[in-house]
Amino acid sequence: MTPHPPDGAQDAPATPPPGCPAHASGTDGLTRLHGPEAVAGGRDVYERLRAQHGPVAPVLIPGELPAWLVLGYREILEVVRTPSLFTRDGVWTHADQLGPGHPLTPILAPQPLCVFSDGMQHQRWRGAVTWSLSQFAARGVRRHVARFADQLVDGFAADGHADLVAQWAEQLPMLVMTKLLGLPEEEGPQLVAKCRDLMKGTETAAESNDYLTRALQQLVETKRRTPGHDIVSKLIEHASELDDDEVREHARLLLIAANATTIGLITNTLHLVLTDPRFRGNLSGGQMTLPDALEQVLWDRPPLAVCPFRIAGGDTELGGQRIAEGDLLLLGLAAGNVDPDIRPDLDSPMHGNRSHLAFSGGPHECPGQDLGRTIADTGIDTLLQRLPDLRLAVDVAEVPSDDTWMEGRPGLLPAQFTPRPPGNRTGTPVAATAAQPLPETVPSTALPEAESVPPGPAVTGLLKRLRRPARH
Image (cartoon, rainbow, N blue to C red; front, top):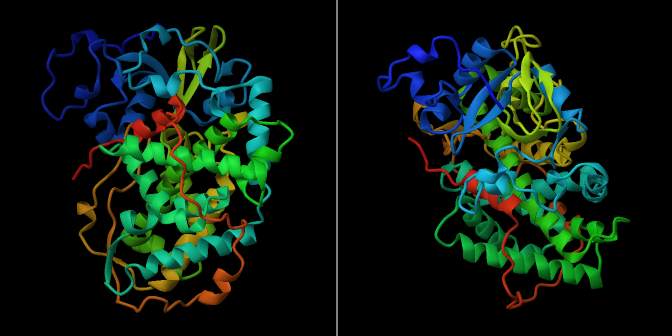
């Protein structure tokens, strides 16, 4: 890749003043996507790049390595819909600069997972995943989500206050996914705690990973012997004949990746509910349904702002830029969603419009997007029914961001509400929700003292991206 520095970059002062956007630029004038200044700039960074370079902009990523950030809606669709030219399993020109300690190694290094493959191998792995997810009726999943959402609200309903991120949104998707995967329900809370610890990259993250690996390995072995109606059993049952390692690692990928994006969708939606009176008024007044609201959030604040990655399989041109074989392209999903060529008026509602880029597109479009919508829709609906007077407990400006250069969501959502006794539910009665769990229950047994299997680099990459210090 040989992007040209912007006009006048050579005349820029050697040391920009503090707070200047130039702090987010490299020495050659290219804009860094990473670092606190770039992350704090948010959408403004994308719009400066768009104004300067058009729909495809040269940028720097961790390690001061060059890449192309695709900002245009049409250009992103061109990339994702042309896997023969923009691939997931190509060879990056700068791959030799990656090593075990490089932050991009887990994200870009080829791995035996559907997200790192194209062609027949991708069809084999992806086919098993999409078919397995399709075996669950939305009605059953909604009942499942409502029950867990109620249980979490019961944990703080009598207090009159809660952090909706830590006490609710960060736990709900994982509880649902552990159950759908076929893990023992009574072990759900422990698995949620271990996964949250793993995702946050704490000092005990390695121990938590060992626990999760043993749990998934035991689950795969159990389902080989006694299959049930759950995702792991369906992965095993699929005609692709995945081996145990393939089943375990794709189950891990679903558990971790689906959790991260669904948390982002839930928290970004709740942030609007608590901070935007017009948004909440439209929702409570019936002018906008909750599914409509979720699509609006996916347009304006997608959980994944930048999606890695594609490798150019040959020399080509995209958005007026010359792309060389081996160049790395990143998909600016958040930027593409606000492309002025398709959204000249950002205040115009996009209710119910699913043509956004939040879940990418093409052969690698997120296979679990409908499941994520179901968890977010049913969960938020349950929360607002249980706590109808939910309100923000701090000033809007005091809500910290948990953004990274790839993702964006609030770090905390301190809320207040009228205290209510646990179990005082306005929705489905407790007995009805607990009567028929979707997957079969797996008998609880102690986890074996099996040898630890380290996480695949793909999953480790996701975890590293989620290891970020809280900013206040």
